[in-house]
Length: 268
Length: 129
Image 1 (cartoon, helix red, strand yellow):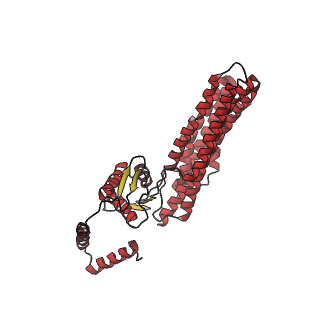
Image 2: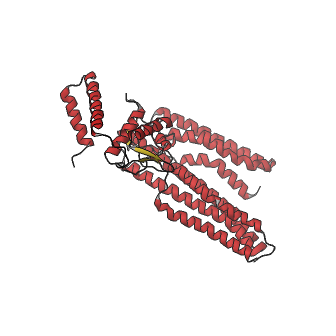
Image 3: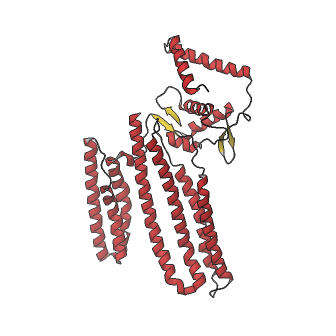
């Protein structure tokens, strides 16, 4: 195991417990507070046990130790999430009142101002594909490796994925308070912009990571091998981290909207 | 925006139907404007998909909404809506008023209270131009 494996596994195990430290407690009743403290203790204890287990395995079973990062999932979903929900109801399921409201604006139709983004990302894919094909047609590097074009073509699947992810984001349940509050409306609009912008950014980054390594091999042959590894491994890791950050911020914003909705409903 | 009350004696499907009708009548939803998908509205309100689908079918049978392939449910323009003869329209409204009066009497409301309620609703829902 190298230093990266150590750091990555430890970060994944520690993340759920550390994250809960940044969520301010909004538990109002004594029962909620005691539940929150109890779940917190279990979470930290489980995190400690996982770290000890990882360090022991890293000493005697390094091949198995790396997979300890999977502990992130039970720690996050089984312990951290219930703890967050006990600290702040905004992190829980959408709170629904007896009186419920909904907007009549259809959201699954992509806003027209996104057309520019779509044109740009499709043009980027087309451009990368053309440069790759040009390298093969002009036979810059011998022998020709047409199979490399598969990666450039596969990058086009990003467009389909992007469309799917955006539609899913747009039809995400969006409850309103019976007397829609202005803050709630503004917050939801910001969330929409954030989600759509985030999807565009991630799709563009993924497209570059898929397309650039084969493109470099087509134009520069084995001389570009180091760069393809840097782009593939480094860039891929960065996009993975970026996706994690994007998902976390989206969860925080979703919790804030849920909390605003609860507050607005309690004022109705 | 539409609002429903789960504790109301009025069935949810009728509440959804009436609220959308009201939005169309008041001009909040204009001809050609798409309605939210059945899934979106059901998720936002936290109710069953079939309830919303039934409300949409009622709107279609009223001639207020039309279903277009690829666009979903869209508010019909006055020109497209099937013309309702004035006599039949007056009959339908008269029937609705009779039902209202019966409900009010059963609830023990005074005639003056019902009239005041009617005027209040007419003022809020149908402001003078």
